[in-house]
Image (tube, rainbow, N blue to C red; front, side):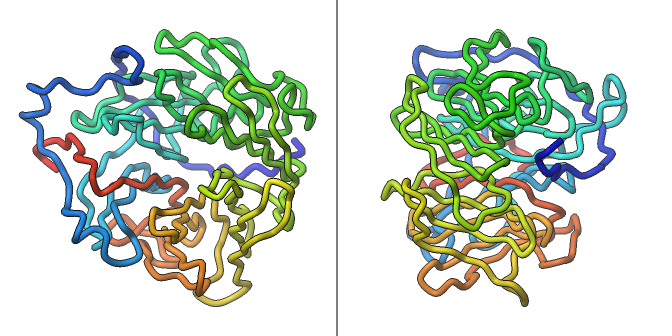
Length: 359
């Protein structure tokens, strides 16, 4: 393959029961009923407390190497966690950890992708159960029901699940009955010609009001699509050798991580002009294969620094790391430690999660 494979060999099999989930009119995955919610523990902090400091809310972390999900407060307390998988999956499928994790629109569920296991799943936060999945654990393919190196799964407000299916050169839209209802790209055709074909797409970031930003690894492109799938613009990302998970900023520019060592995070205009860059070539600020960067409500930049085993927050005005969870270069499972964290998502301070009583 032309594209650089960033997957690791790990050995945590996936063995979880899957049940169905339902949609309610026009609002994605169904929220718990008021009665059910009243019996579940909720998690929140006052805005006054959570808005102090560089991290204005909690972070969901996909701790891939430890095969788990964490929700961590600004004070670095774990308030929710879940181990992904077990032993003895079908076809010797291994769960090798969640690569990315994103809240669904109503914050009742988390959607994850497992690149090396060729599966995407939706997890109920309160019960910690997988309620929907797509793909065959440990088996790559392009036929209906199969994926090959899926990345960045999201649940849209209308309930469809999108995923960048990297090796199949496509973006899929999947309904709750596990039927592909729309596809961008052409399986087996690796060519930068959006919206018809793509070269190893590893990002499919949904946009407010519809549309999407597609990130292409080969050639370092970001493509903005309209809600109907038409190309608005395609930009070559300057100075990026391995673009990962491009995000649209409020000012219309793009934020992208360079999955390299030394790694970088860049803000780029739709015309390809470099606006801002964070890149250190040595010392404690150097990044090693960062795969996702996102802007926080306070304007700071949060990122997972994968191979440095940490999640960080950067002040873009000073280009300094001002908050960190994990220990640079040291992996671990104890509180305060991570192992190859590969995804993050921000939890607004106003959101109350339906956490289980044991959390």
